[in-house]
Image (cartoon, rainbow, N blue to C red; front, side, top):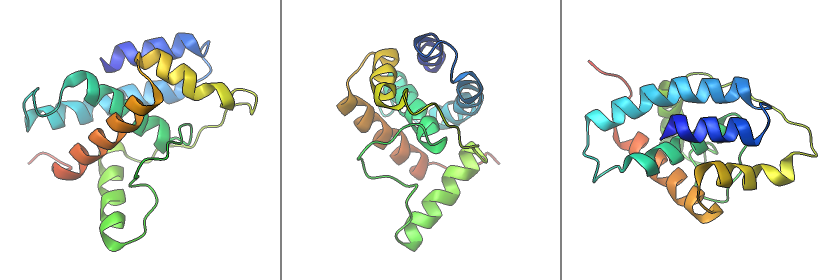
Length: 140
């Protein structure tokens, strides 16, 4: 699912986000494998997880802003621990920028690529964030 969403978004943006999407795909695959080792497809449906990981990566890169509860704005020690855990999963994510004329349509393009609405993106971002917070950051 993650590969499908990345390819669709790549084509929807005419390759504008190629570097960012390549990083999301490589990191997201590792994170998804780790998360799926510790759960069933009923606990973490692959399509929702992939959509959430796509959003997580786009958000970490500074390209997606949703008004969902988010681990990237620390307000407490627990939030700081969550942010550290996110970095352990994703590594250092470079910030990307797109021309300001593209920003108003970016959420629509992401929703189109993920075959969902903005509410689904918010829900799946929260789902993936929660799954990442519950799972170990590294395998023994």
